[in-house]
Image (cartoon, rainbow, N blue to C red; front, side):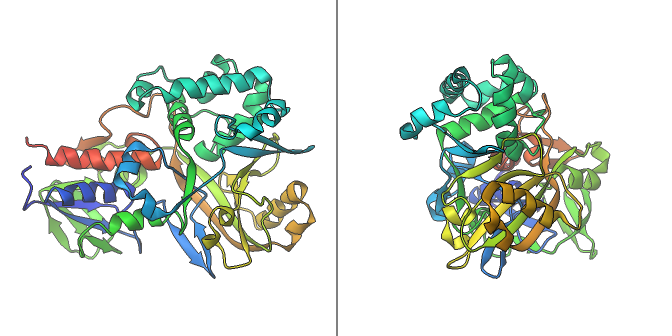
Length: 415
């Protein structure tokens, strides 16, 4: 496609659609994004409730992401980093385990933490050293298996897998069974090793907002619900029809399957999560770190306090507490059950917390089983329509942006 006059119709204003539009726009092609909701971002959104910034589900941005990091202005996002480590809740109390290569003062303390063996901690260091030297392409070529099988093959003991990896990666993969692709595990482990888990100071929603700001006025149409798609045109529910030289479906796979039925697209199995937010007089953690459930019971998987990283997440003098429960728990007493559980973690001050909002997110993350990720070009062309999104590469912010960029490159490439 020669740049300069063509119009590309993009269905979906999430990260993949925005990345695709930016690449097309910068090449001189005219993209138009049709987004059904009231704002861009897809699954990466932030709400403002009485001065509290509530991300729609606890998420982090890994600042070592290569494609996302190159596309975004990371300095403009004012990223705030979590400490490289975690607090692990046990019935006997909180344990602290840190990345001693970046936090050497915790070397002795982390080595003595009764979580796995000393050999397990050496295995973590060796794994970190090995994966940091591999490219994403090399990881994608590895034999794929479940993360649980991978960790067992690597020699990690059951106490280390059960006490640390299930809770830490439970928050990333949204499943504690560790059935996610080992390639995805290696990729995320590499990203954590090379950089930091961060939050933008004004919430995760700043990521899509920054991307959208790079597009020309009028590029994005909000509240535009697409009813029908065919090669070269789309029809909205209002009856309006738009024609273009290419059509991109940058929705999640379930929505794409409903729009491009001729392509035989299978909707994914989704990982779901419930995220609860509380207003507290003070942080139960007092530092920019995540607390994990290191037991094999309870609803809570992880707790963090975004306002410990960025005070802008909460009004002055208040703390914002984020609690993640895996799955979508439909219970009228969920908030009280979670607070009762956290009282064992943090003491009686929990009783004074005020519930702000609960997000039950059915389509939080497409399940990435062994053999389903890091394959192919990162996009598909089905029945004359381009498909892109994280379900076509890796279930992550990086996967969304990479897929969008590669889709744009395929459209721009001369035939």
